[in-house]
Image (tube, rainbow, N blue to C red):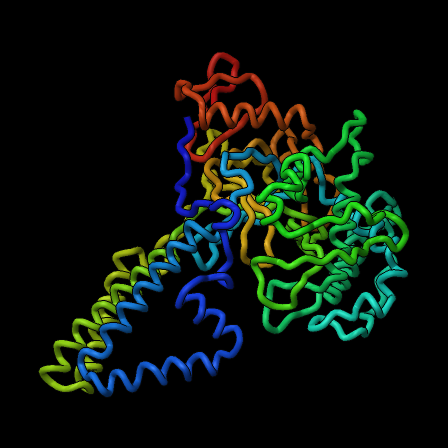
Length: 500
């Protein structure tokens, strides 16, 4: 039976979850002051601290250290208990293709991005190509780019006219496909704009274009070969009113990401004037609609961001708290014996030594990093190098569904509590619809990929995942269906059946 992966961060209810821009108390005052003027904040802090230290030598630093340590612990509590909004605190199961090999971020979390089944990279490209072409007139209007600080009414370079059939046209080469994709990618980079005060924010027209694009992907008329809609995991890309009731506190806590009064797929229709105050932001209010999904501009596809929990931030904040406390003790003692100047020097050296020792004890530069999602395989040649996850693996992930109140807000699975690999997706960076025969041979015979998943197979996969993670079952589960392998789960063969 697979073991749950570590969980360090927990989501909070509406009204409790908040971004760092909405701190209360002294910490909130400092953060708001910092955003208003960094110079004024530093000058104000020095104007308070310096006179107190001069008037009360040796003991004047103690109250400031107490306050700073308290704020560091407040920040840690926010980061791990109040930063993430619970969309569904119960564990959810999603199925999709891994876009990039998981990498560790500054906070120790290991980022893992999924293109959710059943959408494929070629299908996403075709939808974006069609959508950009359909909105060429809108994208040439100066009024939609009157959007400071991103644009001042000057229209960027005109959108490219791309060929949505380039993937199936036998006269087109791989270079042609890459050139078409690159042209759209460059254009999207141009219209996303840039806010010098908020690196996560993007221009209103860019947001509207993505929302309209997603409307094409999630349209019920977008079906598989059996005539079944492909939007069965759409709630992770859009605030679905059937899942998140419009009048609920949860809906009110999530920024508007869609306008039902707009004909998004109409000619030049990717534009909504809907605005609302965003409770997680402080600048440029009110704001327009906000895509709740992440988008890979290089590969032209949406993805669900997922994270395996690390705890580097917790370690760092505790290390800083310990170092500050050590400085206060050393400074106060040596200040009384040797004077304020030598006391400060010795205190600083002592604090640096304590910080370094604790940092080494906590694992050094790797301290608090989430482990790579390794999987034990009987046949690692088919499923990864040394049993590790690779780009393009078809996986099922399991964990709470949340909205990150930071980074302009978006949905994600955080933390990932279980990780199952079912097969190799076969996507490639060259945007080829399928692998070559050689690549097919390397990836194994099952050929599971996003396009082979329908709602029935997803429900069966997720039923098995939920049973394995939550059910009272023996550690060996017999299955005759496709392989489902989990982090920490050894695969065995016996009796002609696959036993996971």
